[in-house]
Length: 154
Image (cartoon, rainbow, N blue to C red; front, top):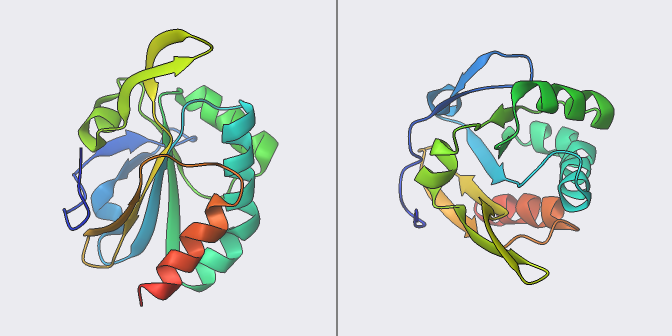
């Protein structure tokens, strides 16, 4: 698992339009990288919707939002279109980046164990260092919490 103070691992994934997005694209910029399990599920829809509604506030403060899940580009495209998501959603189909960040692991739901993405968010400063990690995110209100933590870190 990545720790606060660590540099952001280098990665490259496709966004909802099939364009390559690299971690280096955000060098020198504040950004939040949030990992979520699956497009169109209730918690993920709530989280994406709140980030979308607050996105202009983040942009005004020059903070980028990046969502990552194991869904493919087509799923992300449909999700972005339906939810009117303006920030990049990246397709980690091979789960390599999720594993790199330490968010891929064993989960339990209704007594059943399975492997999946643990909903987590990483806040990154202009120097490319992770300054805050939310290892177990509750979707409702998370966008506001992220915004406030960026503001209080200045």
